[in-house]
Length: 272
Image (cartoon, rainbow, N blue to C red):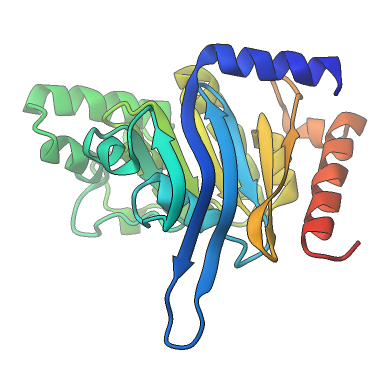
């Protein structure tokens, strides 16, 4: 193994584990034959990492994210989130979740959408106001708190969704293809903004995507998943450093990692 990879692995372990899955399975029972949604998943994600799950539709990447979030229940193996079961982590508000669609309530203003989890968790009015303002600033939406979702662009709505997920300051951010429906220019901009936000907050991020360039641009590690069976095919280190302008996508280092991801997807699909 390359020494730099050994070193980065040791550094990750020193930071401490956030997610640990061992021999994780999930089988959906159907009227005819069982559907194996996840098979023999072994994975560790460490504090401060940005880890992307990538693979073709139906490979289980969103299902794995939902298991971490306690939205699906595994049928075998074990998984822990911040040293707790996913159920305990959910009840402890250990993570924020950003869906594919912004999922904002149209009858609530942006600031009231961001306030919703704070209201549920019992924060007082002054604390809610302070958190709303700081998170609007964090995602570049200062001055838009009084707007309704339908008055904002799709990209701005997703930024509001991220602000809501961060409002109660969770250590872990789970993101399920949050930019998949946006045009390429907006997506590039939000990728840049997300990297800045990650660097500023030091959160652990788990991110689902179909896009190889997006995965390589954002991630410290990329989990390549295969559809047959639905399991992890390969985990690829993405050691491009913390400062990544969009122009890095034209560098040999970026293109080499993208090639490795593409080859991993092909091999996992059974094309090699």
